[in-house]
Image 1 (cartoon, rainbow, N blue to C red):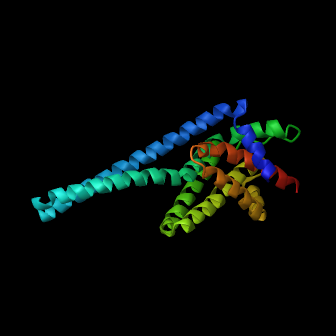
Image 2 (cartoon, rainbow, N blue to C red; image 1 turned 90 degrees about the vertical axis):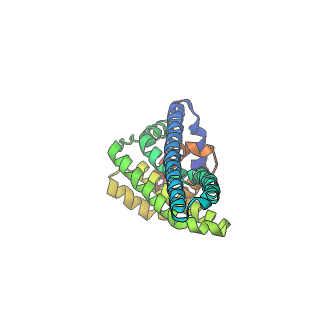
Image 3 (cartoon, helix red, strand yellow; image 1 turned 135 degrees about the vertical axis):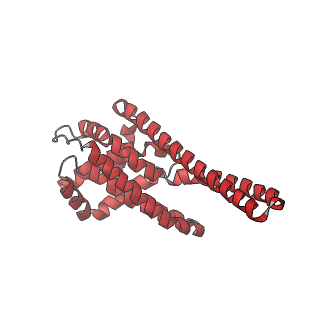
Length: 234
């Protein structure tokens, strides 16, 4: 499996995948910016509404204290958005990966498995549906795990393990569905759940590296194509 990871990393910056890399990075950044702007606007609205309500209830004497609290909350919210954007990278990755999965898999198969029958592109609507489901699952898991961040290292471990499960599952099934029906791909993943999860740990490690994690869709899809090929021959 380490060999699969090395092959995937080596191919990331190869000329045929370079355009996909930049498109993937651009889309990931755009999604993060949109999410950040929406959250910032929502928080500002809530802070302004709370300030107005407090002043209406207690009168002019609380104007300055309320403004001071609102200012502190805005700063805290800004920092929270930055941290939240980093933590939501696996969710963004799940969405971005669904757009470029087949382009990445095509190139990996052409480079490393030219003698094998080529995979068939997963319909875009199906890839997007899988990406949306995975993103929502990741979001629910992370919201449930967020309180555990209060326990320092334990929360980080939970996030890491959850990311391994969510992304390992999505990318393996996207790779498998190129060569077998959807139900069969899911059954293969369940039969090899331990191996797929270990593969997900490699992806979770990659997505944990700032900046580098913008290339996660390329690494994850290439890696899972290799893993699927090995499990298919087992």
